[in-house]
Image 1: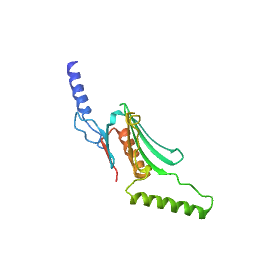
Image 2: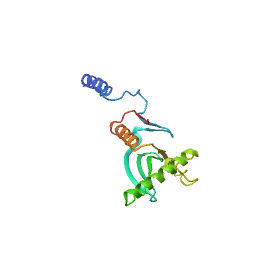
Image 3: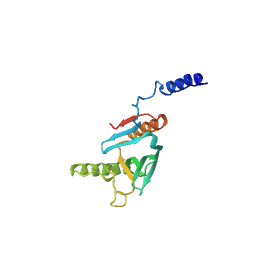
Image 4: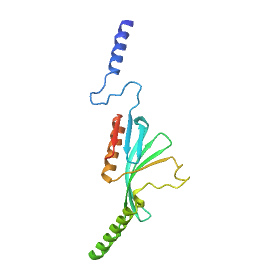
Length: 168
């Protein structure tokens, strides 16, 4: 009986150490992580702690369209990445719409000249309510960047591999 068990034990140990050739090589004892670097900061999470990745869109107070990605984890903080864009009023007449567009362009130029960013270009929080609400918020420059970020996080979750996303 002992002679049969020893070769089986050796085979089990040898197969347990074999890796799928497509998987990332993570040194023993190191935890695979998903890392994200953006102009506003960085975020890192153990892949095994990721529960879900989502992407959705909504309107805030009738003034901005938000495209938001959430990564839910087993920890007590929720990370949100979002792209904000102003809702521009639509004129029923073509001539009127060009006036609306020109007015918005002039407002943007004035804000740029005075060194002020438009409100929809920043993460806004209130103290202490939203600053202590266990949320980590990042704003991204484009929907395309947000889509790529979600794809990266989703791949890390599906494959359980070290993955890094860096915004352009």
